Image (cartoon, rainbow over all chains, first blue to last red; front, side, top):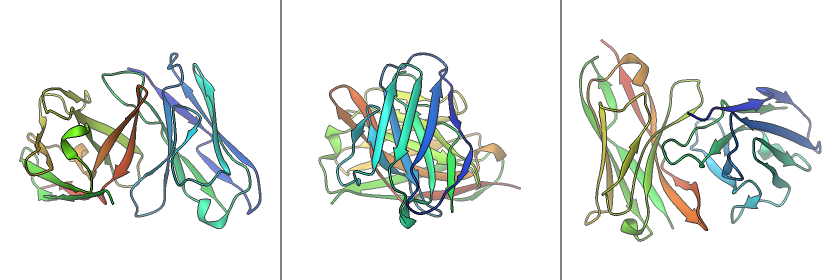
Length: 107
Length: 121
């Protein structure tokens, strides 16, 4: 199975900061990589698909990059509503759509 | 507006069974593959199972293979997850989600609010 590893596991930042979260796959997944945001007590929300495509309605301060095994989610200027947990997910393997362990973004 | 509403969660003893449902509305249900994703208390997301739009193809995580069965009733726009042989480690919030397919890329673009399954004696 393809393993997905996110770093860091948690991150402290301030409003207005630029932050980057990394996701690494155990083998090449080309650009079959999605990013989700989850707030406490809420369902996850799709932010980015195909590594760098912004989901409709998601603010442009969110961006994704990478291919192969290394991927990044960048938030250009943190807003108060961005403090949440972020997950990457690979959709390359047709047998299982593995998630990373999550990165908690805190104030 | 896409809406997914899960139901059927609850408390069940180890070894027991439970059937989850997910009622979909706001889109052409049969045109979309659907997934179940779970989240144990305080833990991350775990993909559980996926079913094609027609219901003819299904995939399962190794952790539930042979115990869980995904199915759907397209005439009622409803997704199901039959869970047998439940274990304590199956305790989680179970979310149903819609698979979005765009140029070969699959993502989960709409999610329900989740239903809690607790396996305990």
